[in-house]
Amino acid sequence: MNAQSESTLRKRLIAAVGLALLSLMLIFGLTNITQAADGTPYQPAAAVGASYLYRFNPSNHTFFTVPLASGAQPVGVAVTGSNPSLVWIAEHGLNRLTQVIFTSTAAFTQIHYPVTSTARSGPYLVTTDGRYVWFTERTANRVGRLDSVTGHLDEFYGHGLPANAGL
Image: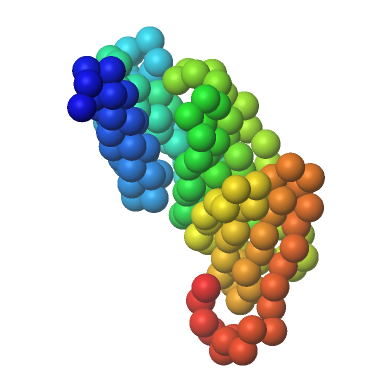
């Protein structure tokens, strides 16, 4: 292996570990080890239901904090791409999917996709497959698919699972 391919492999490994850590922190709600992008300690709001997404910066070993809407209750996350990085979050408490687009470690935008077919479908787990974002609707016992290009949402039910399957 030449030096350039080793360097590329090392960078990809560090990025993958950082994204895995980000996923775990989002799922388990670890809010006590954060720093702002400038390195100053981050003091999260004491509001009930406050949620955060953390992005690890491997170049300076710090975390960048992205506040999510109060009551989001993020439970599922999927990451794709490298420039830009796309982070998909199932916000169970707000009945929506959120896409966070990182154009750099500290620059991001958020786009929200409400799941509106039932009052409280409870998006729970999320994964991506090219342009499609697949997710489970835990309290509606359905599977959903979002076309990330058009924003069109399809839902699938009647799959023979019992009402309490807890997708």
